Image 1 (tube, helix red, strand yellow):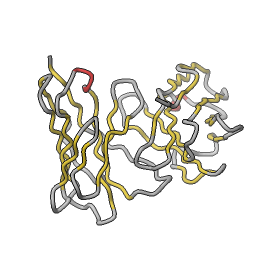
Image 2 (cartoon, one colour):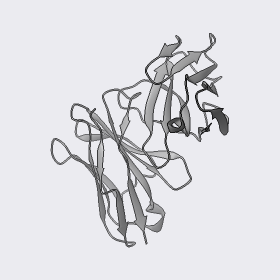
Image 3 (cartoon, chains in turn cyan, purple):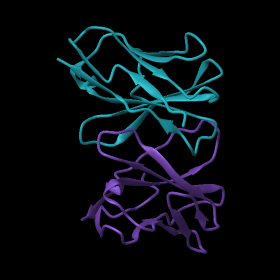
Length: 112
Length: 111
């Protein structure tokens, strides 16, 4: 069964450093998303992406964040200058329909 | 601005049916009810969705009341692997809509 994959599974970085989280969505999906979940809290929407542009973004997704689909398979989330409060689990998802989004296993980002 | 209300936690014995309720009294006519779950430390997983008719798939059944103000997700024969947080979500179905997750119901399956 096709699945969304994410790398790395765990990323540790120092405050102020740039990080890139990578995702490979399911191959025939057209809609792509990033969510995050701070430990013990709800899953929060960050951004949706379709047709090579952002469809919607949340208040969390400020100028420090960017997304890119550099080729036909990868979908990346970049945080330019990480802050302690960016520590969270980041989930990538893809879909052909909004009601059935397929989530990856997540990348745990730890900012020290 | 929560559109749904779910119990914080529930227990169910292994092998029994788990019935998870959800209230969505302000649901509008073009909004669907859909359910996801999140097993510990994993990404959320789609379970099922419906508009007004009852729905069943290989994972679960969804029972929506006639007035659509509440629904119940049924896991017919719960196993230990069904221990997870279950999210009831109400939203219009647009192709690139974000999912707004609430706190969900933490379901414990007891051996």
